[in-house]
Length: 239
Image (cartoon, rainbow, N blue to C red; front, top):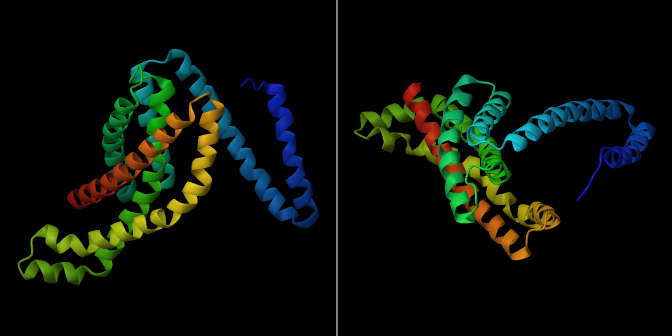
């Protein structure tokens, strides 16, 4: 694959098609779309510059530092409240690092902390976990605040703290993972084939690509569940 800057710019001209349609029917939405695409372009340029040098250096400590910084920025942007961001960032950093190492060992990569494998695996594990855990911990906190009397009642009747928190944990896990389970079929029909096509374009054999997708799906679901539970535990301890 050899996409030069000129070819990329020619490809960007394809955006003129939806732009002309929006110009004809909804100019206000066209301005909003242009603003979003502009911010996306700036983000991609910065990201491309950073990744270019990271892949050139390909040093373990640089790759680990990049994962820590990128996950911190993503958590701060998506989780604006401190009671959300701190537990999620701590738990996501610990769990994804351990789970990512397990995945890389199962992949039998030549360089465990090499940028070509380490960064994509860590990023894929963190992406879904961030959205699911934010939804889960928010549900947990709201349920605790809304049904505070239930917790006090259970504790007053001799229940251990974990037993008293069980209804809130159940609600948080259910509400966080219900959309994930509902979207699994859609992911299998749309997202996975798209990712599979990208891997095939990179020269990966079909069976190896399928095996990687199965491995990443199992790892993502497992790590997300662990991150959510650990986030709630950390929040409970520091609140």
